[in-house]
Image 1 (cartoon, protein in one colour):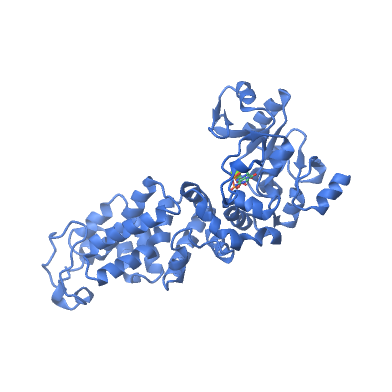
Image 2: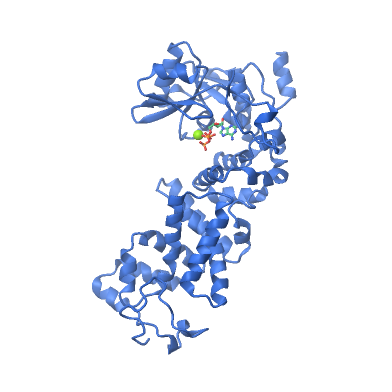
Length: 452
Ligand code: ATP
Ligand code: MG
C-alpha cells in the first residue's frame, strides 16, 4: 500500500511489486495471442517458470490494434528454455535469447534482464554499451523504454502485470519514459526516435516530462552507430505513418542531421512537395499491405541533394552523365556517415537515379530499351513522383504512361523525331552542344539524324 502510494508520488519510478489487472479489469483475451506464442508460454509455465507476452504486443492489444509480433519474457535462462522445445535456437552474442520455431512462427523468448548501472558500461555521453545481466521481472520492466511497452500479459490467467503504471498511461494515451528522461535518453538516444515514432503510430501524446529534454539531447543521435539508425529509420519510414512521423520529428528538433540533408531538402522549393508526395504514396501502400521498397524510399529522400549537386556541376559545364554519377556517389558517401544504407539497397538506389535521364530520350530505339530494363518500373514510379512535384513536366510522365501500354503502331507514332541541337527546341538552349546520350548508347540509330 505504502509502496504503491510512493510509486504514485514518484512518477516514472518502477515499483518492486506489480499492480495486477485481473481479466475483468482489461479487455485482452488469451484468444488474441496466436497459438504458437501460447504454446510457448504454456510449456514454460508447465516447467515451473514464469512466462508472459511482453512489450509492443500487449500495448497494441490493449489499444485494440493488431500486434506485429509476440515476444515472450521468462525467468528461465536460455539454457533452461532450449531443451523444452524441439526447434529452439540460442541466438545473440551479447545478450542471448532463444528463437523457438512453432510451425511457421518464430517466437523470441528472452530472459528477464536487469538494467546496467555500472559506470564502465556507458560511454562518455552516458550511452549504454552493454545490457546483458539477467534480473528480476521488476528489473526487466524497469530497463524497458516506455511505460506502455513494459506490460506483461499471462495468457493462462489472462492477467496483466504492470510495474510502471503502463496501463494507466495506455488509457490516458500518454507515452512516458520509465525513469528519469535525461538519463534514459542518454543511455540510448534512439529512444528519442522511438518516442516520436510510437506516439505517432499509436496516436498518443508524448508526456511533457519525456518530451522536454529531446531538443537539447537531439545531437546525441550522432553517436548512435549508423547501422542501428538505418534500422530505426526504416521502421519509421515503413510504419504507414511516415509523413506524420517526419513532421513530428521536425517539431521535436530531431530531423536535423539524420538523413543528411533532410533539413536542407525540406528548405528547397521542390523538396517538401516531392517528399510529401513520396511519403504519402508509401504510407498508402503500407496501409493497404502492399509491398514497399526501402531502396525506392531512400532514393526519394536523397534525390534533391543529388539533383542540386548535379545541377551545380552541369552549370559548371561538366558532362551530364558523369556529373550525375559523381553527385550520386557524393550524396551516398555523405549519407553513409550518418545512417548506413546497406550495400544491396545502394545499388538499387543508384539504378533508380541513373535511369532518370533516359526518360528524356523519346526517339528511336531508346525508349524500347528503357522499357525492357529490369528496374524500369521503379524508375518510372520515381519519374511520376518528379512529375507530381513539378520537377519534370507532367507531359513527360504521361508520355511514358501511354507508351508502356500502347500497341506497336501507337508506340511507333509516339516516338519523337530525334532532337538535333540546332533546331531551336528546348534541347538547343544554353550551351548548344550536342546532347550526349548519357547511357552509353550515344550514336544510336536516331542520334543526330531527324529533325523535329
Ligand atoms: P513495434 O510495434 O515497432 O515492434 P515494439 O515496442 O514492439 O514496437 P520492438 O523494437 O519490437 O518495439 O521492441 C520490443 C520491446 O523491447 C519494446 O516494447 C520495449 O519493451 C523493449 N525495447 C525496445 N527498444 C528498446 C530500447 N531502445 N530501450 C529499452 N527498451 C527497448
Ligand atoms: Mg515489436
